[in-house]
Length: 360
Image (cartoon, rainbow, N blue to C red):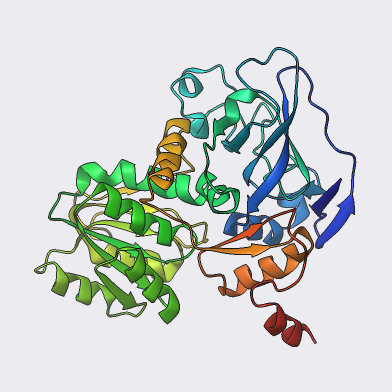
């Protein structure tokens, strides 16, 4: 089968053996795989700093069709269309049994790694899923638009749901960074809350996207954002700030824009630092670092999409065009989420001509 591999120096398309389902395992034919800044973070690190061996197949946002079912599995059949719950835990501890495998305290030490982030992922024709409990029915959702819901949608939903107790109906949410996660978070907030939504991004087209997704106000990312937020909140600041970038600058913006007793949710994978102490963040502030979400969160996200309350803005690529998609993602040129469809023929990818001119 074809697979996009990363070996520590770059990406390459390779022909590798297709997986076979063992007991309790499932093999999917991949119908879509989303690309993420977490992938760029992996590729930016020295190979020796990664907690797993290379090469690996990338791709941790996955949907597909069941093509091989291992022994001991019931309730799942060939031809079923499913989404993959990515944050695999041990499945046996109290945390996992509560549904929060994303917080499993044993996974890392047991060598259990998510697909595409240590284990081989979905940027391939087929994907091995180690246990059927990681699969959630798609029930008619378009695969290309559903794949990003397994991380971009799941992580955004988990962050928003966790913050709702601090977001009153007449409160204000500030979202910094309207990319793959941010544009979904705007829609999720609009679906779950009546609070005022203020979006911030450097790019005019992403601010326009935020407004189309339901934001009340979209501001350019400048040093004046905290003052503008206070102007829009009668001087008190935002109840909750979601930072989908997590640079030093955006984290300072988050702290300066927050009201006393508010919450900062650091969702982005940037390497910024937020000093937390008296007089450095507002009094009574809560700081969270959400990681993916629970499996029940994923069920909720897919239901919101099925009801038409959220939709993913996507750029679709063929498997062979994956390096181009990552180039656009690294430059901040992707509008919404980049998604690879292994069945798509190469050609006419978003930004292809521009990228070829730049490489030439």
